[in-house]
Amino acid sequence: MTEKALHLGQIEKLLASHSLHGSESLCKLLRYLANHSLEHPGASPKEYQIATEVFGRPRDFDPQHDSTIRVQAGRLRLKLAEYYSTEGAADTLVVEMPKGTYVVSFHDRVAPLAKPLLSPSSDLDTKADVKPGPGRPGWPAATMVLSVLLAFALAAIALLLANGAAQKHQPTSERVAALDAIVPKAHRVDRLITDDTGAAQRFLDATLDAGHEGVMAKSLTAPYEAGRRGAGWLKVKPVHTLDLVVLGVEWGSGRRTGKLSNIHLGARDPATGGFVMLGKTFKGMTDAMLEWQTTRFMELAKGAAQAATSDISPTHRRIVNLRPEQVVEIAFDGVQGSSRYPGGMALRFARVLRYRNDKGPADADTIDTVRALYEHRA
Figure 1 (spheres, rainbow, N blue to C red):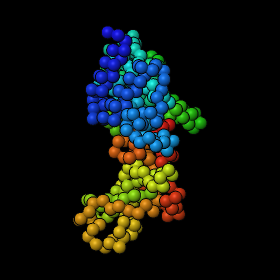
Figure 2: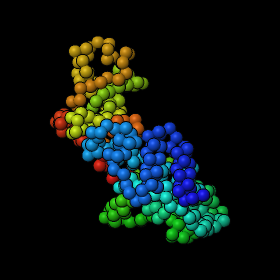
Figure 3: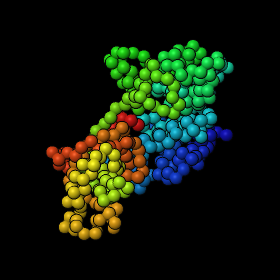
Figure 4: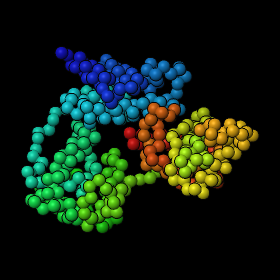
């Protein structure tokens, strides 16, 4: 079989995978880019070319103002990483699309020589110091993380009962010492023990630069508690904020029945003068905030003259569309790709901080700002 045939066979395997199942647009994109890369090695197609030939965009498509192709490419990279960290973990032929290009590359993945990681009586504490570290060259980072987690899971019971002594009641410092005694440094995840805030910040920055969400700070005196974070753990990761516009709202249920609760969030689009929806949230709202926003959003309901009618009552209509006038400050943990919303992106763990009555919709953050956050992550 020729090399080209092998490469095309791997593409067909990817297209039939669970990771890409149901995503017709990503399948079309992968097939097109793979064929282009095989026919024109090293040449990257233009965004305009992809938009018109793959997605049927009109001839006036402008990639400077429409990020569709960049968003779809970012989603495809995530799906490829997902495939090779799960169902394709044993594949020897790897398909990648490096960031910043639309060239699909193929390379062989040679499995590393097996090295003994654990002794029969050794013990790994899955909670003591599992922190993210940079991926190894040639392997998707997710594959390395999953491999390490699997090793930790298989050895957890042995570690907790090492040498006949229960380790789970020992403090973190002693469990870490036991770990270091049996596991070579090359096989340990990155860890820092310090009381220097500057050193801790540099460690966090390096972890974020490696593409991870953050770090887990743990008490050196805390005992092992399976499945619980407790007071001895602290998740440290950056929190972003955006000023967005409320595009709509949904009537609540349960203890929020009769209150307008779940708000629809939109970023300003300078190119169109409109707004691009990025998701919904009902988190972070106090009872006083729910009372205030219910009154406020009834005033902003489209067709406000009918605000007192059953047309927008909780018993007749769940979603209330609003005039895009109210700005809200939203905290969130990151931006992820999403096929649910028109911008191809959604906010992760969005929650309300406060309503910005000092700002108008023209002061809201733009979709370009959100896109920059997403592309930095991808």
